[in-house]
Length: 79
Image (cartoon, one colour):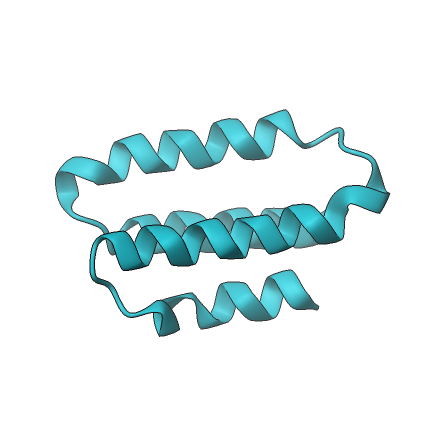
């Protein structure tokens, strides 16, 4: 589950790019999602990592942040 921890850390790093008033909400949201899926079936991991990346890019674009900020997350999630 090292990959999951790396993805979570990267998502938290990305939340620091958001406006200050939104960071806490999205950091908590990310934590809740990672906790909820920690016991997921390993066959679902590829889909969950893809969702992690897709949702992160959507959020960055919502706040007009270049999606290239998520390049490291893309590498983690597609490895």
